[in-house]
Image (cartoon, rainbow, N blue to C red):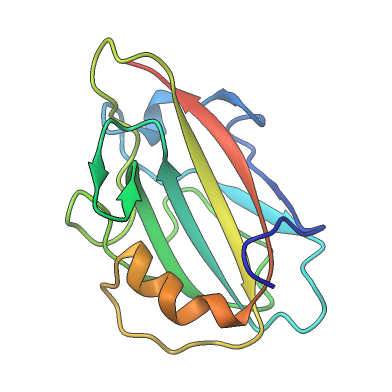
Length: 157
């Protein structure tokens, strides 16, 4: 399938699409991952993954851009979402160099940043070790992605 939006829907009870992400989910607040919900996963979904990426971050590295805030994989295919501060699944490493979620913390005065919370449906559970970067995870997952969609939130300091 590659990286194309599917019919799957992704929402959050904490913010609307392109709405303001509450401070509690930021590095300035409690730094909790926001609640997410998804529906209409493709038939054959065996696992899910969640990635949060800020493409507005002023970082450019060879072959990549932006800032990764969350990499989470091997969530059961029966999942329909994650609660606030979720601890399910296998945590990858974010661009803060830590496992799990690291909330929005754009440079002060840099303007609004857009945070893409991607949910990927995979045709199997990959059983990957913890601590993969987003790019390491995507290298393994890409052939198994059968659906994906996202919700975008905004945060500014």
